[in-house]
Image (tube, rainbow, N blue to C red; front, side, top):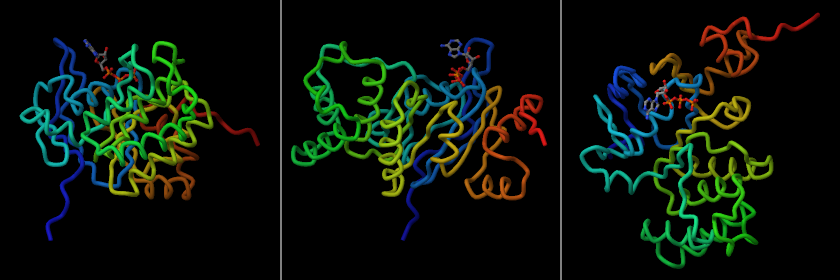
Length: 256
Ligand SMILES: Nc1ncnc2c1ncn2[C@@H]1O[C@H](COP(=O)(O)OP(=O)(O)OP(=O)(O)O)[C@@H](O)[C@H]1O
């Protein structure tokens, strides 16, 4: 039996904006089942990396494969395996929440029975049942973000790429969506999630990838993080992040 393709493979990925190198020769492979946190300071290259993965920006060098499909050579086929929530949402404002989910389900070619079951489940998880007939331009920022996350779960594409998708979500929505996203990974999907909410990532993710200046400076499994905390090397992910990025002076000192 052949091993399943990795959900995502980046090889030597490089993205430049004129003379600025935003992503520099990045190699990364994500297996099915992994829930990967992409962290790093502002301007580290997280969104640029995700834009290349989603096929909305072209890499200058290197390659991106989703489920074995080359994103540059076969963008339409690659997108079948991908759900992407960008940092800056651009949704169809004149649709209602329900119409939007139907629209995405149509793109994913979901059969109607499965579509209706999944839509009802996602409306319940996001507590948007009562807002299903409200047009998106009347949604709050958090409501729109919840709907965007819900929409990429439709049809369970292998790889979900979520760029700062938890900003502005209330704690109960965050908790419900976290559980639902974890289920996606338990069922063989993979997630790449960028966020600055490190305590949430620490509880949620199975792997932590840190970019700084467009380069990968840390790639740590959950068990490696647990070991570092057990050995007293660091107290938590935040402390590890500050140490790795050279901001050791920002680690609070404990008073005896
Ligand atoms: N469209 C663009 N044109 C020019 N420069 C850009 C563009 N997009 C990003 N950059 C630059 O590329 C670098 C990486 O930006 P990017 O948005 O990928 O970082 P990030 O890690 O996602 O940051 P943040 O945490 O602030 O969202 C930054 O220096 C940024 O100014």
